[in-house]
Image (cartoon, rainbow, N blue to C red; front, side, top):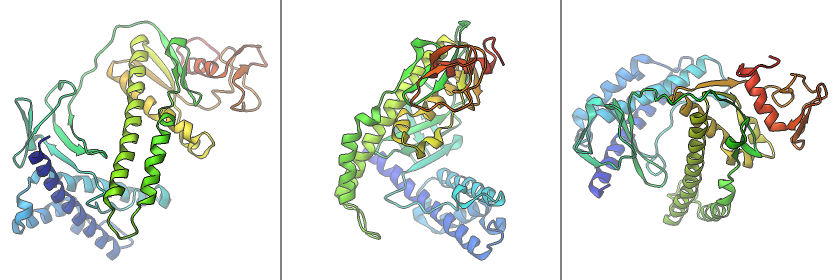
Length: 373
């Protein structure tokens, strides 16, 4: 990206950030004035905020220099965030579960993100033309399958700019194979399946990068600014290096997960996947290893890949999957400790690896193979 385009995008983001902060200020003022009903649609609704923006652009040349499309879109985004917060309040959710009133976007902390609807951009000769006279040369990762309806231009934590297009896609059906597979998530192995060839071992990308990450985090701790003071150049440099390490690990996990998901989807017509939600692992002794396994991201990549190619996905409830026998359906009287890796059925005498037994239980519960269900 040229320095001219980068400066134009950052200037556009400054205007959008000002609009967002004005919306937050109005919202807080209304909330303080009316504590019983924090929403006052007559003064703080999206339509009224849009009218305020129109009035501000009429008297502020700095605002008129920018495009109207991303400024209006950020008001819509604010409206969605506030609606989510109000919905949580009306549902009487605990404070720790509420989204809360949207916060101010600080200059050095908030990452730029600009959204343009169909009337705010166009593609010509491989370039992206944005409203306001901003022209970007895009390095395409792949061809667009159809005309985009909107585009979001954003910068990540390490300073790279991306353009994300919204396009209506069609299902790309793969040849039928007649095979099915059961998938059980775990910590020792990220995914254990009924097919030995499709097991996903724990890659340990986070463990490999831990030494470098610890070094940069210590640099940040030594250079952390005091409250109310601006961060030094050394602190920002250490923070950027830390973000680079995190980004590399995230990309490694994403790449491994997607490649594995594509292989599983290509070779099987139906998938019985454990609907595992590993939040409780964050409070256990396996928290770091479970996070390094990236089970949630891998599961999301698998479900997305299956839907993209028209495969059938059965999400199986994880209750008692490690206690049931895949052969006869008998259930052990006590939960098996994690240190016990072999499942031995006391009813039929079947013996198999614990995770392999759980993967086969997924198939039986999904009705993909005859069993005791």
